Image (cartoon, rainbow, N blue to C red; front, top):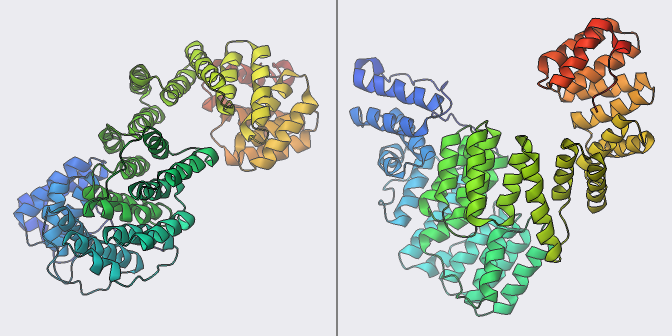
Length: 552
């Protein structure tokens, strides 16, 4: 599925169409330019407001109604999207997404459905979404049987997504045997195991098949590498004898039916387009937190940090609330707001002190140079896992060992790295880190080289790992091989100063002095490590033989 369109909110290159005489209406023109500028600046709320202002000056403009609709939907400003969708999509030449949005708004009761059919036929994806919404409109009108009787047209690659929809429609119509088969089919074919487990398990609970639901939840939690938090909460509910979740309302059912195909757009369409469909799902059910979390990650990908934080913060209750706060804090850290991230992580950990936020806080502590605090948190989590009879997670063991190494306790760190390797023998990061350190420290060099070779086999496109392999060749005196691997590493990670320094050393040992000097200067310009900078400066001033061999 390939989707091509010009989205006006973030893509400011969209041209003004011929015949749209903005300059004749100064108020319209000013609002339009301000709206387009706000979109380019990633200020979606301002863009939505300003496009709405421009449209108010020229409500008959199809050009402005489309842009007002797109901008308000991307911003999650559904009140303005409702207003703009009517002129944008309720006529035969209307915008497809606005037409679909009006159908969704009608299911929630916010608006009447579109009164005109589009002259252009929908593509396969939009046609499926439109049909799903038509089904839920029938359910809302008390005609669930009519929705269940409508023919189903399989869409390539979307069978599992369609089965989720059919299962909920059939359940709404009271056709429980057929619904059970559809839930089973969706569970087997949809590549969203946590989501389909939650829906199928809730259906089983509503049918009084509590033991089957429990087994379904337990099977997921036992085999999933990252167990779904909603599944975990569902199992806890069943074990506590709680009431089954109620059947979905038409708007809730439509939101869940559209979620899986909207999420699929992430891999087949521009990120902004996927975000628009996820906003459409949110407009149907703002409390559908699984969708909100996915939407937040898409907004983050688009560089809409403020919108992503707002989405994360909207998840204030339920089993995904803690995950939302953890993800928000980590996003802040990744985007350079380290002080804010640290403050938020501390607040989360102080509030709940469950495993995940403590590990988030530990990671942020570690990456901001607060290793004693990070190590204490890793120790606490590991002790609780041991007391509970759970296997240790290699990541906790590994990062605790990194903290010990930073603190100067190589013996303790080495033991931790070996334990992490025992827990996850094929984890490239562990193989590379331990192997590289053995090479640099000059003991167990052959063993270290073997570990790094294995890491390179597992992650052949990782520049840091290929650097370790090249540096291992260098330490073993195989300088031509070192050059070969380090050149590949530089191509993969051109901003890594250590790789440039290592390549400079390899060039120097093979008589390529001019190239060595270039690589050392490049490393000096890139590095933020004073020790590495001093080591490189000596090389530039006095040559390789006069300089320290490595940083230990």
